[in-house]
Length: 164
Image 1 (cartoon, one colour):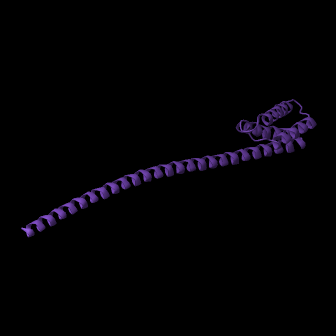
Image 2 (cartoon, one colour):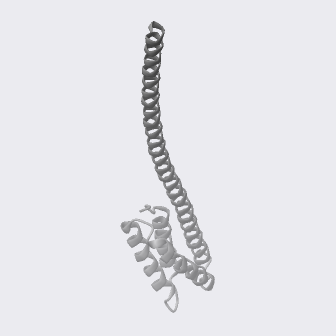
Image 3 (cartoon, helix red, strand yellow):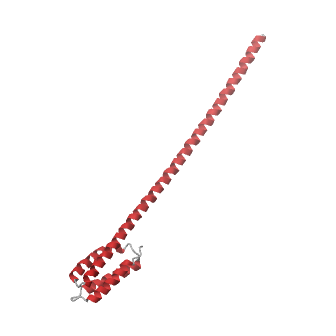
């Protein structure tokens, strides 16, 4: 009988140990599942934030490159306009008004692409000078000194362009 009691006590203690181990295992599993869920959520947040930051960086770089390209194009337009006015001035100084008219037509053609990209006070000064030169070159017998003076004023206006 003593043996039976001992066996029952040992069996009871073993069952209690197994139950405790099972509950401990369930607790550990629950904690592991919660840690996994937290890690997954954190990884998603970090990935989303990194993706958003990368997109913003890409947009900023693209915008900067576009502005740089626009600035180079604007610089080229200003240089082209300056060269055209200089060619017109050289032709006018030599008295070759047919060449001056041809070169000035190129200046007039280039002007619209440049006009909206510069500050209004620069644009107005150039526009006024272009109109003055156009009128002077359109006269029946152009006045060389007047045209040369008008072209020099236009050249100074083009050299003084303030970018918008």
